[in-house]
Length: 368
Ligand SMILES: Nc1ncnc2c1ncn2[C@@H]1O[C@H](COP(=O)(O)OP(=O)(O)OP(=O)(O)O)[C@@H](O)[C@H]1O
Ligand SMILES: [Mg+2]
Image (tube, rainbow, N blue to C red; front, top):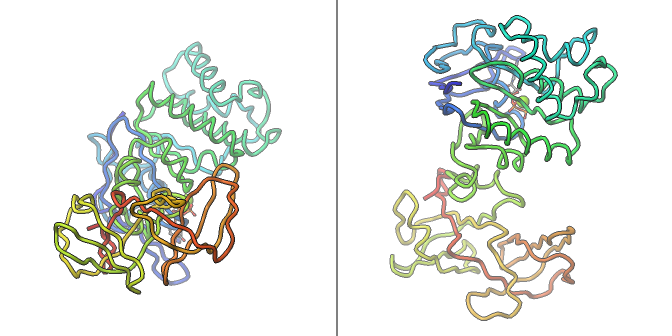
């Protein structure tokens, strides 16, 4: 096991004569024994970063270290990394079992030890019944499990997995990710795991690196990226439905500050909570207010901080309802109970949990 360290890593591609910067000066440390998840939208550089660590691409600038070794000049085979990528690259003439144990043949393992590891991993991934078959006889999901087994069975310093569950159906994904997490808790291997499925990322990760545009936006625990997002990108990307953002400014003094929306129609008292953020906020300062749909209550006539608004859209989605309301020019999404009868234009009262408000600098997007 080992930590993985990227220092100023950059990757540029030439594509049709134009320079594409896929990874921009990334500094990142994945700790020894943790699962770090790379999370971000399509094209943000997750796969390229993984391929740079694995040695399948060479960096345009920067250094990559695995444990005590600087590896960016080494062949992939010398980096002691095990890979499971989205396209499974199995050898069609070999059986499933041969495909999985193939990388172990060169190692010093005894046949008995190989058998025992194989049976453990194969039952974990539920491919123990198909070990004698050829890959061509399996569906996409099972082929992907074979590729994952081939990665997990290896002795490596770091395990790199890029969307390794993408060909499974959603029930299976949930099951396998829980087993992967349990396997990790037992073995404490250093793993880097790419997904664009945020629930999968939040469920698996010790820490998440949220990426956008080739840059790492924030590295934090799942709770950290959710509760203390570094900027509006992370705040809007993590959480479903996404966080509400309102443009406005701060009013009042430090003792009883409030937020006033740009159109003047929405005023919210702001508890002391946002002032625990990293930067000082001054009265009159323009801010972007962020509040998550799950932190706004449909008040239903309760006294207190309820605000009047009108229904725009209501969708009842089985376990919960998603309600969009309007106040002035501001539209807010909130989570409710399912099965409510709410019509467009109907007046409702909403109660934002002001303790949960997060303020951002509208110029930079950084959390205040
Ligand atoms: N071999 C290549 N040649 C040219 N451009 C490339 C190459 N590989 C990646 N890119 C570009 O680099 C950027 C990052 O791509 P990358 O595949 O790393 O993103 P990703 O985060 O893995 O996306 P996805 O979620 O879709 O897999 C994209 O703009 C992509 O088009
Ligand atoms: Mg990718």
